[in-house]
Image (spheres, rainbow, N blue to C red):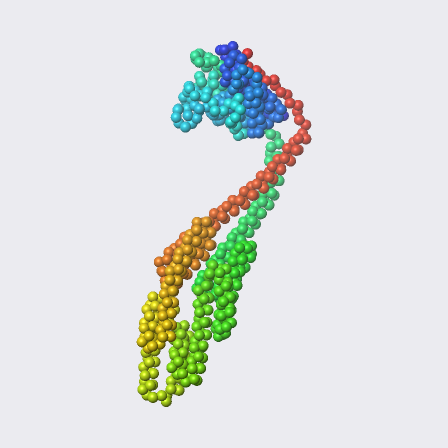
Length: 636
């Protein structure tokens, strides 16, 4: 039906000055498809058979399985190549080839070598092939002018042609839609070496609907010039005066649309649902990360009540988005926070033993959360230990006072008082002062001189104790250098008083201050390590971990009062926020693109299914017996 409802006219000429023409042209027009093949033998021998073998093999392959597909074209080209490789000849056979396959509505061409195709529409050049030669490559790269290719010495130096065992890479075009009055020209090098492209275009611009006249005009133009180097030439012209129009195309399109629209609707709804679910999940992930970071910040600021609230919120969101890794980490945070809150409650209730036990448990838990809250826990343990020591000193002083060892009792009370001042334990300080007042009241009967001496000693003791207190205050405030100076001053005072115990205690505290100074250096190195970990995490785009390590480093620098480092971390955190936002935007865009691709693939699969149904229906239609035209041979 296609051939009967289309009008394709073909004319050709092929001549040579030698005894044998090694060009060849042939074609076959079936009911649904037509195939036109032109070949140019490169052997140029009198008995050259390359072109004829190639054309025959290509048409035979086409006739076995007519198709306009890319695979069908490649099958014809490979069949022609195998025919030359397997031919029995004294010489290695080679040839250029160009094949056109059409369904009378569209065409596809494939070629290897330097035979040329030109398609003219309304007198203008619409499509053209490109030679697979060194000269054409030089022209494409601008090394020679395009109009010099026809005379360039490398025009027949081909990198792809028939007869190649390896690296046979022919060029295959896409489908080209034909319109009424399209004119197609196929010609070998005997034509394009001696007739300019512009001249060929002018002939086709004046062409009618008769290809024979166009062939004769071009041949007359060639022969009138009597070119000295002309040995052979082949020209074939195909006029698509009327292309095939499918009468059921509109019905098919309407049927496809009615089938595809519901599918597109379902895909669109599914896509919207997926996008909404994805966006909701991303919002929850972002809220989870925010709550997670706030938990860390509150722990670092010792605000465990708020830390507990944020941690519970983050843990709930982690469960909803099924982030098992975050759930595990947040669970460790929650256990630590709850343990510390219970310990603080026991401490506020003056249940020092229970508080100590709970803080010791918390000290074991901090290693599961990157040592967050470690300083708070150990500070509380030290504080509880000091509270207990204050009461132990007062109790020991009471025992000594009962045994009339007033001096030693006073010493213990003063120690309790000094320790209370150091840890800002008002209740312990009040108890120590009361014990001292009672001790002094009990000593009222002692001689005035002894009392005066005791008073003087007490004042000196008080002065030494003040140095200790100043040292303790500086130590508490983290000013360990000043604390060390005060402790050494207190040691000197206690040595003058002959109080070796207090002098030793002052010396120990001075050593402790010195140890703290060294610890500060260790902490600074630890903070530097966190900075390196943060930078490494940021380079891997793990911005959440990077922020965590920056916060850990920031807490240490802040404690050490290194303000420039704190400011530097603040700037880096701002940069991470920007990068994280950009990354999330990229992930959102990628996810949306993936969803769109999924939708497109679903639509394409549905369209293919519809096409298969249409093809099955069409297969039932009674086919008209194909009439094959005998291939016209040239050259003898």
